[in-house]
Image (tube, rainbow, N blue to C red; front, side, top):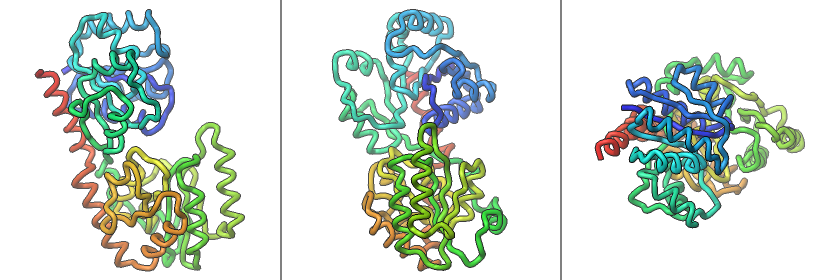
Length: 369
């Protein structure tokens, strides 16, 4: 089966990583994979690094007649069985190119992010009518697609994102060594969060909560760095830690490529994000057997089970966050029970191979039709 994967984004984040992971998995399963990416983008570079056939074009924007014509010629020449886009803006290139080539190739759109813009005008109706299936990563994204796009519910397929349980396996890593490297004592309980320094990730609430529950044996960990243009916010958060008097108890790790080891050093995972379509960082922590305190909203509700894997708190409510963190901090037995349940939930619902195999089933179904 010949697959064309498109993501004409020039950024680099969760959406782009999931795109490449999906394409790479299909290649490993023996599918003939071609990646269409923006010239010199991080996606293009990573795709080439993974030895995938990669076509690079300039960013087409919303209307690029020459690129539409060239793409239609590629479609005619390659005769793809499935076209799978991970970026809704790609539809402005793909749909006209498909129409020009007169190909009936099934078109799939994966949606990783919600939209606040209602796109039900005449032009968007033409674009979205050509989609055979839209894959949503959570129930909140499924609803967002119905609310903002001219799509029928029958065209939306819920397939959650995933994590690699072979990589995120607590049995593989030395917890004592990880804690020693981070300067954590044996008797200390570590509460950590992992997110880039960006407004809306809940850093402020975490600091306020940390101040409320602070005691001698507690440490607080921030994993992540500032993205482009967000250094000022990162500096504000670090200053806030000083102002709240918890600097000595706080660890800023910066960006870490060894997330399984860092998560293994934690005892409790905090996920205070204001709005998440899904929450990859949360399932990674759960896969590492960590109990969590997470926001009761959006895609988090597809992942965390209140009272079983996690304690959920009201969004942006630092008082509630502090109360829930303290419950876990006070009970090693509860942490152990919830951590075990968290790992089991990821094994049963968010295993990488299981989720990607659901996409393969969708390919086969559409190609057959």
